[in-house]
Length: 287
Length: 286
Image (cartoon, rainbow over all chains, first blue to last red):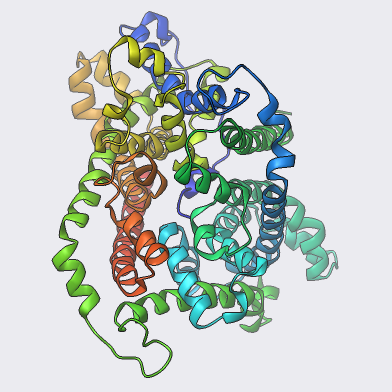
């Protein structure tokens, strides 16, 4: 699950560079060319989605089938079970990730002990292991060592947790490192217990990191099919079903509709979270 | 923060222990399993395991071409991502001033994050009969299968999938570079080519290097793109063969041996990444 690197977690910066007068694109040679290049690239990135939307809007598999939105109406009826499994796995993974990484991030950034950086590197190494290897390794480990986890929802959820927790841990640590210790020290000096300081001061300040971590975990788990393919057994998730349909049958409107639905929900989640975070934190900084 | 330190060493361990235990159980133990299975004769894991180097000699004998194909695909995809991604990032950072346009362009780059599966499926649904591009292909008298299920489309798909990671890394590097350097070069009369060669590219080198490492490792590990848009020969790449050996014919030994090769590559990549980001950090501070 190495699909995301920590750079993605930077909050979007609206105006990072100084702007100078006379530096407008229209006034430069090659400005038009630059915009054409951007337009071509945009087209390339929208094209797969457009292809899927077009393929999904047919009443049946036949090439000349009439236009229809029925594939979307049938989504829940047709794929309700798999979508349900997906929702359960995604929500459980996010909750377990939060429970594991919030204390760990606190320990790894606020407390000093020997081997801390090494431990952090070791804990985030999972980011660089390809999903195929994760799947194979977990398949073998479940079969040989953790036999109770074979073909269980718990086993699938734990596989998702171990593949995605670095994406929760890293933004939390980034955020914690950016919070000056004076706030917490003030709380302690004024007599609050360490737990109270954590709950009332540190945790609220960690919110942007928590949001980023939840979002990244959601995107990966909601669309993950490869590790799932190895460990799911009978717990088929929506993306795994999608992969199976793509691999073993042709282009069907209902399959395309499921693909569009999964991508759209992921995209909407990103848009909503980004807008909410920008409004809350950029607005506050501007004031 | 003296009060924190006085508590002793047990505190941090208690906070980190649950995560560390989980990572050990479900990351270290499974990787050890892969290593053990890769040197064990099939069907002898449970009782009296017999050890063998057969799986490794088998993949060196029979799968040499597999490694070559996987590396060339990933290398060409990385090259394409760099050739397109670096100018893309530069234009995005230095030439696009409207915040809305910039946000929209960045938003588009989010789609590949959802996975190569959608890129592969998108390519299929565009090109196959009844797809959005089918009339165009017919007008140009091109068979869909001349494009679909070819190695060219696999590499194109990998490049499309990894390009955003290149753009993000180069953008991050550009944000740290003062535009005054480029402007000074321009004012002093350097042309476009010379500005890039003498000023921009040298400053961007660490960022491009990190981007290339990420793109390469993602391309190498990508499963859906070669599996779904490649022809039978193009599907013979590391990631796909590992999955098919394990799940299709249940030859876990060979899958594990090939997997160990991928793990080794992953660790080299991690090491190079760490070195490069340290270098970039040092240069940014200097």
